Length: 131
Image (spheres, rainbow, N blue to C red):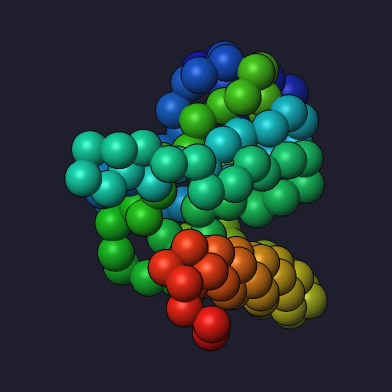
């Protein structure tokens, strides 16, 4: 990991955060892409790919839980790290920042809900269940 003009540059395959680790910061992808991976029963599954301008790891700022996923750079990427203290200061200066975070999280919840519905429909059809 090297420091650039803004944020940090991560090499292809470099881990930003690891599932299960303590988290106290989120990231804004300034350039490039990252894959979000969840491991369950020793199997790693890609949940999604995040791109430029996206905020990732924000759950660590809101909750006192361990990281729910691993984030790995896909190619070279630059990300700005924002810790909870700086995030709260930014919200005090510009409350619209909080709205944008909630908007982003809401969009992801909607996307995941659609994926769950599709999977349930696929599994029901495979099992011969009419729904």
